Image (cartoon, rainbow, N blue to C red; front, side, top):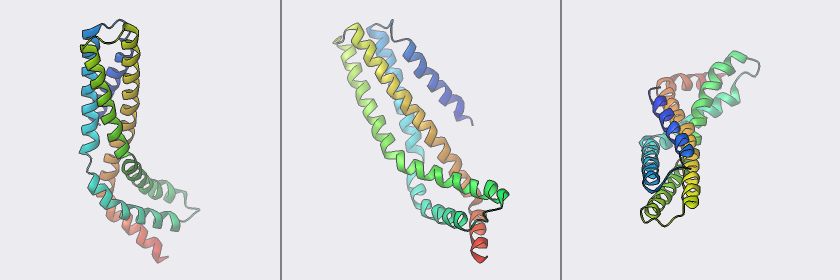
Length: 182
């Protein structure tokens, strides 16, 4: 939960960068690009700090337990579906989405960093007209805002899922085994 204010602050920075583009001159544009590069570095670090190998190693067991519970769950027991199936579904879904999207996120963040560095060089060399500068800054800010949203949808969710799995792994396995004995 303490990461939420940081993500909110980054979101605010991205939104304010969108609004401040019109009156920016050379140095302000460079300052904006530098701020956006800081956001790229932060988001890249957030994605990389999640233990990908651990997720990859745990996922087959998570999927096996999930498949067993969903396949054998009593269809008419709403409490079971809300309490047990929903919990393991949250774990499996978060693992699956992060494992699927991680490489794409890192590639897009790297591409954004390259684009921002190119834009910074162009601003330093004064190679852009005012209108071109505005358009490029808006485009890069918008692209980074989308990446920020994508990271905040995947990374915190997988952290919660990992914690759930660590704390409830034995419970989930016990539920799956009890369903198999029926």
